[in-house]
Image 1: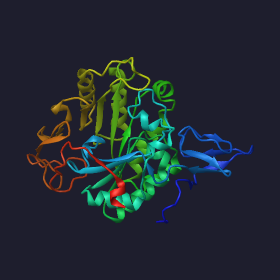
Image 2: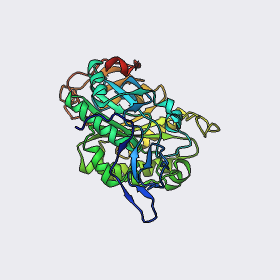
Image 3: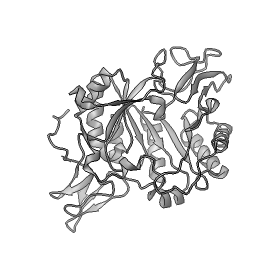
Image 4: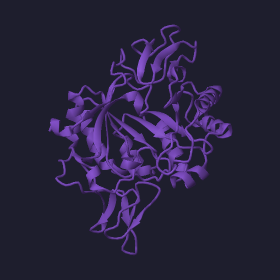
Length: 364
């Protein structure tokens, strides 16, 4: 791994020059075309000295130890703590963004915590975390930093997790996921109209990311869909979404249907009724999805994992607290012996629902 830059500005490689003295960023399907001094829509990639640079390398908006189930990942090292952090900016413009103070930040003060990849890895190790999550905003836009952190973590036996909207081009996607061990991909809806009007993006690149992860990598991944009343919560759309998942990804990719609360530019919308989440979960199971969950609501049944063969409860969950564990050390149902899809490592962790803010300067 290269030495840690002494500046937050580093060179990138996924861009090319245009014929009119501009450069085009090729990391995501926005293909921002920049003149000298301009920033991309994500705000963190910019044109300096005739090339695209990342301006937030080694700078974070904050660190926190979370339960891994909060990402959410229900089938990846359950019960273990994960060190979470993000930077600033985002390459989508979701009107319902629930981390908008970070993703839409244009203030340097947001990036108050400086941290080298090695410091982050060391902090995770000393805090007893099995993994590090790139979250709060999307690692797609700070992929150079995320890759270096992942490599530093791997040197200490710590896993790397991407929490992402999956809005990325093919070549950088392949580069990023060479270094990721797990991911949660936010499939925000299943219509182009929603993506175009609500996120100012497109659906197909996200579907491409999902099929790539399934068929061309060993990355464990799960899907999250935030259901917004009147926007993406119809039975028809959930039928089509879950049928697509079954056809293209298979029955073993977990999907989380989570509740919306009014935020950012969608304060006029009502919170998602729990009955909508239950309906979505029912449709997913009907269509063959083995692991469908409800989230952001108190629903132990909808948050628990069941054996698809005999119906036994494999992992009980009450919010982020584990209430039952009926898997063998190799991830099989204790009742019938059927394998549960996921990444398990003997007994589960015991982190529970704790949230622990971290100051990286304590680990330098």
